[in-house]
Length: 101
Length: 283
Image (tube, each protein chain N blue to C red):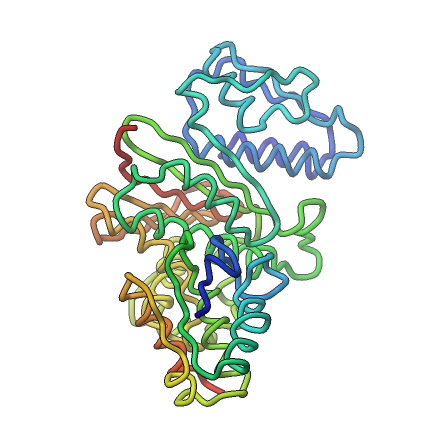
């Protein structure tokens, strides 16, 4: 289980590390990829933050596909997204499946 | 706008010290206060001597306390303690050079439980995307434009609650959407021109903002990228009385009740100002 508000921040914002302290790139490289490599399957809990800008989400999840460590098919099997907000899950699923290499 | 242009001319171009006379100001809108704060901040940050800008304070005690609270008197030697009046403490300001969710989040948390479901999140998403746009695009000046001088990639934010409405505004003093859009790495020039042609728009700044919003909606370009402006508009459509204005250079884009419009002013804001208004319930 990776609870973003609990282990990362309640205030995610920005795409790249240089954008700010809690960017999508930092979450992907320092939290998401290490957890996927360690556990294989992962529940990502999204609730509890103030929100997510699309830049953060696209870099964290779309960037996961671009990182080429896992295929889009592998990632959709490995990651379970958990949120009361269905549109948030749909948006991230779109990033996981639509990213160009 | 004429006043701000005169202030810029004297302080940025001619480099002379000025006194901003607010003594007869009896009311001020959040957007105007925010642009004034940004210009004063820029002037003070580039000033060699501290007497570059002083503010003659409003005679009206409430306006004076508001100006003090949001930081307009930073260059003065006579700041006052923060007021505890309700009509003053509901003005809050922040500034930064990064996409910092905590700064917008802490302002919005103040209204926790008083904004309709989804609006707090929608405003947060819009604010952090506006900050990220500022960091990525707003100060992407070409050689000679020297836009980053003395202020970094700075944004300024202001909120005010009044008469059951929360206004949140964020601005930068960058090149503006009409100039940054053609330089975008997210959208090809061909995609921008094609959409412009499909929409049948003229070459004005207002049209450029409309195109930028629609590009985000239509997902033209790299998958998932460039959605920021459409995200900024989305929050207000969760409420029947919510509205948003995106002012960039001379252009204005407005959205309320799912309908949008765009037009142009004769004067430029010389940057980008985004202004949301949403209903807020009583304490």
